[in-house]
Length: 531
Image (cartoon, rainbow, N blue to C red; front, side):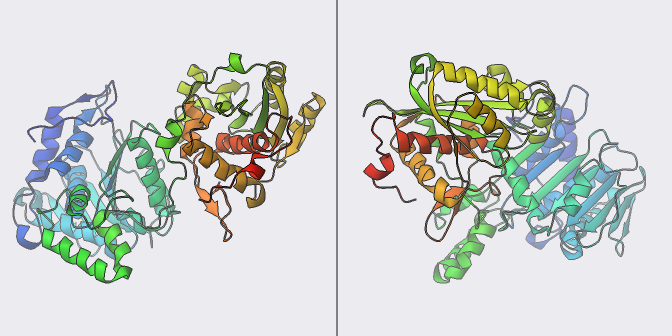
């Protein structure tokens, strides 16, 4: 590969070992293709394939071991992913220098899992050097590499043994077909802890079930690719078309299929597209299989370019004494607590100014960073998140903090969800605040949620580009009832949205009550935006 450039996800303290990368590439290129017109020909890696192999096997940590232990490769069908997966499985089994390596090929059922195994077995048969050193047990779907007593074994979601694996490598084929997460969890959660550099190689096309383990991993990959998350051990690759792309455009096909005109004939894609045009029922299949789109994918609600356009500066000192309204979302004692103040505009040229505050238990901060791969620690150092002592949120600390805010700002009301917040609401009332119960159903949530979108599109809000609030806004998925009412969907929004919910509650009170001297609600003055 003449112009190889290491992935942007290479850690600062990692280095690229050309020797290690060359070894992996050369091993694979000593194998042969096994099917069709390519059968028997040397496995010359395509550029996108070589990029993946060099990144995975050539980027080394200071310890001398590989940086990435999980690779998620999502790509349309017929791009050569099964052959690549088989080659990686053989490399891990026979060429990685690991004694008694256990490498597993996993899929939804035995037939699916056998696809990669059969390719790998044929590759062994076509390579005399490997053939002399391996035993292929076809009935057991096992390949044994005798010099290191390592093996490659097929498993399926239908039948797999209990825990007890000592995994060096896992190749998951078509992850989107997994019926549940059991096999995935068994194979990836702790099974490779005894190995120094296990590799979980996940390869799939897009699916349709947004509640699946595949979509969970897909979402993590998207978050890392788009900078919302950071995980130096995770290597994401997604080839596909955007939802807004024209699915009939050959340029879009090329973007989604890096092997087009190599392993996939353009004529095949043209024929499939024409068929989908004539038969609308085939459109989703074309989008999913040829363009790698999650055809039933829920779409994030807030267009972030519109949100980012509202990053007008917010100066707390200039807001002192101003009328404002609070929204309080407590979540649970171990989770993020959010409190957001919204300042109504003082004239038609003014904007709704937003001041958000967030708290996490101090002792769980590092754990959450490792578990969620969200930079809470960075935000804490930057002052965007506060921590309270202990391993649960210290509500007394938050109450005192809100009490101090009350001396700086004219907090007219605080909206709260009564679930889990009864005691705190009573304590705040005793401190002199007016608390307003706020339901989480369509009736209460829909008007301010729609209004938030409208104000954002009109650039009538100012949020100061607060990174935690931005992250939460980007996490929102919307639930809609038959009447067109909407509310944030906490089930679909797998990441945290507490700040967004607190903002919506505070905004509702700010819109209804304004500066507190007119008694006229904006809801009464303007037509609602229907989204």
